[in-house]
Image 1 (cartoon, rainbow, N blue to C red):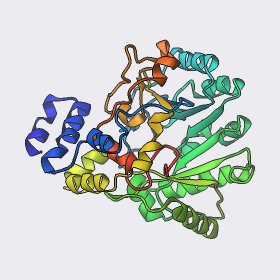
Image 2: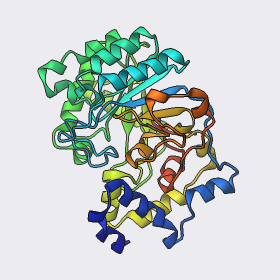
Image 3: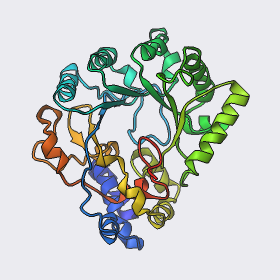
Image 4: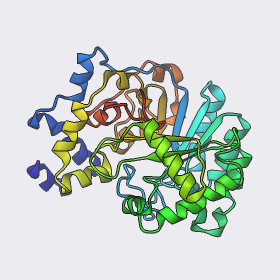
Length: 345
């Protein structure tokens, strides 16, 4: 492991991380594909494609410690309107019903509002993964709650904890207070109350541990946020921190990599593997390339098809492809499972 880390300057970040992840057999963990084979689930295949997840850029107003996108204010990767047009064409030509818009902070893409408006005309469900603090970052974003409401957007936002100390430790000083203010803005216009205005929160553990029971955490979050801040929301999604990008860096620097990978592997659940998000979703990178999920996107593992780009989207071909797996996939299949919609079982 140490010799591999010394080569870091010779390899791209994605190459380094894939090599580190592929080295887990050296300390006694089976390859993930072997674990799938043991439960007759390899090769992993799609069920149906009903979600198009689109990363419209890696620019963000925050620098979260666990971020698998490695997003931040210094990132310049931004999806163009031409690539967005290709996404719209896919929606027009298929029965895909949900488009999940993510980033970075997706609202920082200069074409974000136009893109949402065009999707709204197609009468599809729109999810926006909002970091909450963007609503307060600049006066030009203060009307975003009303914009979300007008288009009945399902707002999904990360809130690591119902206390400031744990939230700020993961997402930066002052983030909790701003997040609470943003949640109140959304509540005040009906989010979390009106059935058409869905407000969901995302919980990631703050360290090298698996998340707790999703339903129990949701009940605790609702109780504490209501009591302390009079905030309501619909669902809490628990997502396991995958060993990708910044979180993998943390695991290695803190000396927790081997222990954490063992924990994920030992908690492998074949029932969770049945419901992983890569089976019904296609992930679109900011440059239009296609991936099985956004974690594969960060590791630059493009779809296993001849031309994996949104401009050549072929639903029939994509529906019969073999999903690319690697050892980071243990994170989505441990315990109750993990997906963009929370636990899978």
